[in-house]
Each structure stands twice: as C-alpha cells, then as structure tokens.
Image (tube, rainbow, N blue to C red; front, side):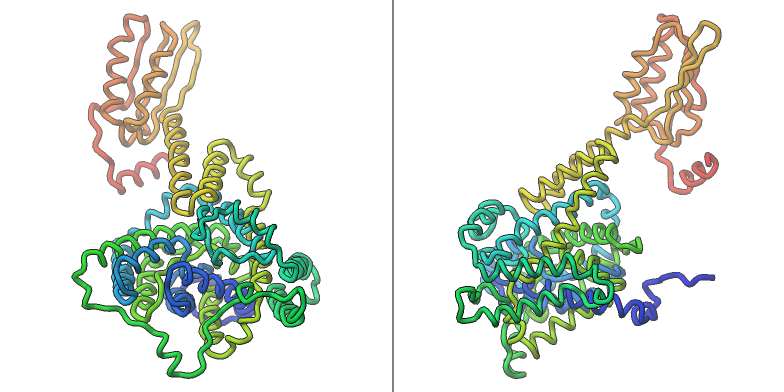
Length: 532
C-alpha cells in the first residue's frame, strides 16, 4: 500500500528529491524576501531590522508549525498603513509591540475556535482574480525599479502610494528618471530568467541566482562610470559588526500598557486583517500547488498567532502568509515547507555574515525576478480559461483583478466577493427546481421537482414560474428530494393550488409536508446517501 504524504511524515522534508527542489527555491525566495522585508519596515516607520526579524520568524517559526507546504510568511504590505498609524498613535514602538503580541494571542484563539473555515467560502473565481491582480501589480510596480526609479518602497501593493503618487503616475514618472545602468542589468537579467531554464544541462542552477550574481558584478563594474548605480538602487541591509550590536537590535514590548484600550483596538485590527490576508493567501497558494495539497486553515491561524507573538516579543512587525513570496516559492520549484524554513535561516545568516555583499545587489536584478513571477501569475491563458468557464466565473474574476489593482488587496477582494456572491445567489435561484413538460393526450403535464433545499431566496423564481404556467394543464409539484422548504415557498405552492381551479388547471402535490425544520447534518447525509 502506498504511503500517504502526511504533514507529519518528517522523512519527506529531508528526502533527496525534496531537498533538491526546496534548497534552490529557498535561495530565490530569500533574495526576493530580503528587499521586501526592508521596504515594508521602512514604509511602516519601523527599524529595518524589524522587517528582517519578521521574515526570519515567518520562515522558521510559522512554517515549522503550519500545515501548508508552500506558503511563505513575513511582513505584509497590507498592514503597512495600519502599522504606521498604530506606532504614531500609541506613542512608542514598545507599546506597539505589545499590540502585536496580543494580536498573536487572538489569532491562536481564532484558530482554536475554527474560524479558518471561512476560507472555504472564498469563490474560486475571486481567488483566481486575486492571483492575476497580484501578477499585474508586480509588473506595474517593478518596472520603475527595473529602470532605476526607486522612489516607492519594495513590496507596495496599493494603488495610492505613500509618496503621493499612484501606480500609473509612478510608472510614467519612471521613464523620465531612467538609469541606464539599471536598465542594462534588468534587461540582461530578464533574458537569463527567460532563456536559462531552457538549457537542459545547466537548468539545475536557478536562473535567479545567476541574475543576482550578474547584478553584483555589473554594479561593481559600473562604479566610477556614467552607468554607476546610486545607493537607493541597491539593497540596504543593516550591518552588524559585533555580538553586542546584534543584541542591541532587539526591542521588547511594554507590558505596562496592557490596560490601554487603544492597544487592544490595534491588536484586534491587526488580528482580523492579518487573519483574512493569511486565509486568502493560503487559498491562493493551494490553487498554485502542483501537488494539489490542501492546507489546514485553522492550524495556519494558530501558526500565524505563534509567529506574531514571537515577533512582537522580540521587536518585529506583524506578519501574514504572503502571496508574492509564496508565488516565488511555487514558481522556483519548492516542494515542502522546508523551502520557507531554509529562507528564514538565509535571512538570519545574511544579516550576521554577508551584509556587505548583499548591499551590492541591485534592485533592478530583483525586479527582473518579480517581473517574471508577475507574468506567470497574470498569464493570458488564465484570462482565456476564465472566459471559457462562463460569465458567472469571468465577471467576478475580472472585477476582482481591476478592483485589487485600483485599490488594494482587501478592498479589491471584498468587491470581487460581492460580485461573486451575486452570481452564486443567481445560480442558486435558478436551481431551486427542475421543470419538465410532458404530454398526456392533448393535455400538458408539467412536473416541477423541487431541489433538496428551497429557501426564501427561491420564492420569487418559483412564484414567477407558477404564474406563467399554461392554463388547463396538469401540474405536479414534487418535493420527494426536499429536506427543507421555506414556509414562504410552501404558502405560494398552496395558494397556487387553491387558485388554479379557476384557470382549469389541476395541481397535484407530492411528498410536500406542511412544515419543515432545518435539517441536521446526519439527516442530510442520510438523505443524500439514499438519493445517490
């Protein structure tokens, strides 16, 4: 009998086939995560070290506890505005850290209470739209970095930017501020990302690693020339020269503020927003997973809660599962959660041992990696596939894409959800019964078979159908398969029977009770089994 691929089967994480995929993928994720961690920390008004620390904890702690195999956690762009405002309103970073710790505790309780089940209610079309939107955002946001215009922080996903520009105005401005050194690096990097994987004998070496090496070499060659890169066009990681300097980077929460109501308000806000972003990301990552594994969402909330508690205790930022890093992990061939764990160790080791080398990496090189990631997420074939799936899938998909691109992740998904739910309800209204027209001599026999559950939402559709039935028909309304029929619908059926006689219509009601209680789960399962 074949052994199941369980999340508790630790041998799978250290098998040669897994390490061969996870190790190279982790290096690529690390290279992408590094500037994102720094950029989000900078935009949040927090120390740069806080961003890296959050990435380390997200990689090592959260991934170790999580049941997701490909998700990568770290500081989230969606929380930037909340964090920036909270640090200012609470008066000190230490008080803010207490709110992060409390948010983590709240997330653990959400996981224990099984709040992760809400992830099952995100329409597939909306999740696909969110992924495509992230791809579009990556392309639009990374083009300025690719040409050397680095005014916006790495990792920004919102349409309205903190520098008072928006996605499109920044894109247009970037072409007036072109750095030819950055353009050369980004073009060569894109060529490597596109063509290197096609060279079979050399494809074992990740293209992204070559891109970074090339970027470092060219940035050094360009020094003291007209193509030289400025400091803001390079990665800027804090340099630690001693153990004491390293320990001094840690900041601890002020537990004396535990009774501050504003601290609890911030904690609740972070817990809810971070949990929703995490669940959205987990659903999206599961869709991208080539092995089609399903992540336990309640366990993920607990893992995120532990991660946020640890981050708050040591001076880090709040974290979520992050789509961009997770997408890079998938596209780089990651297989198990060890890819995320390894990337956490790389972040830590890089800070301790090679900050000078990392500070030579051009952002243009990393922009090329993210541009290719964006292209894969927003590929044209996905739009064609959603079009073929029908209007009820395509419209929520496109609305989600546009809404996320022109607002931000949460607002865009919320808009997409509303459109998606509209189409779900519309489909539900149409599927409340099955209509069949038969002939018995010269008389029409119309059989209306009601669905398993008929709610008040189906009232209008059923009423309109009954009113439009031809006169002098024989109408059979069959409730044999129905577990529940709303009392409003029952009233319509009985009223129709009483009034039908005047139209020469005969109504026969089969297996419809006068009253229905909401069915319990056992009754529902038993009924389904009997039907099948």
